[in-house]
Length: 357
Image (tube, rainbow, N blue to C red; front, top):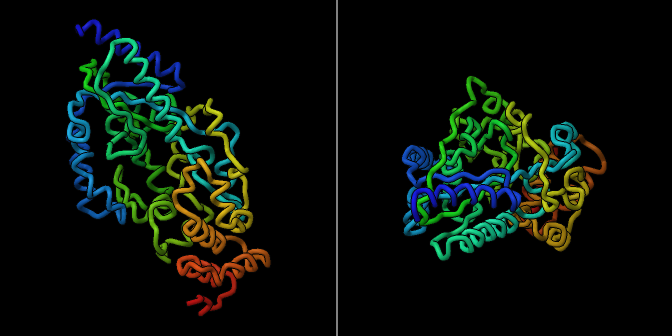
């Protein structure tokens, strides 16, 4: 293809992307040296905690052409996910209610965005014929924010999120690695300025510095990635957050420019945007599987679900209902659940030695 044809194709790809429901599309080359150095430093400090896959597949993250041989460009897209009229700060102010990260309230985004990316690739194929590509949606060792920043979709903010000056940060990312030598877009520039709101608001003070997150203290890591016991000193700081945390986005001034999603699949399911801790703690394993079918929440399993809610109930106002609910799980078959239930009960009753062995 000629240079003019590639430029025309690039413009057409952006048009197709918008028609498929993406709010923005950009193209970058595969040189991300500064991000490689950042990743290696982060791993060297052990900030990835028990996310061993980060270390094991670091080489693939650092070299896109190794992950997908022949890759010359990365097509990055973003899609808004924040549901309209969904309470956020209000839920955090009601400790008897369950706070679930806004991205997980609806259906799992992976399948939806992957399908749209495939449709985008199909459009390109119809237009130019066969070409090399592979689509990703948080499903492989890809430094997606690095490529999105180079493609002009936003800059990596001090909270490590990708921030767009016209859309905030409430959006998902997806990529197509391709062997097409498309013209690259201009990279985004940093607009965080002197603001440090996200660094100071973090409940567990997980930020070591600007753009450096110690995942071992991050509530999203503790409630989703960590499969064992949550450190006792961090439990009171988790509050009522039972799946993920959005605090460093909620405080970001740029999110005043965010727009509600137009995707029906991201609408909250089963009233998860307003459910109480007691309601969710009563779910049996089968109910958990039923209610989280097609949801990102399902990946943590019922055991960690109960673990997380037990911690939140330990932080909730003391009531007869709360104590009774916790007592009902004291003999749970999982030692992990029993440990966290016993801790939660101790917050309300001050009694020790309640852990069933």
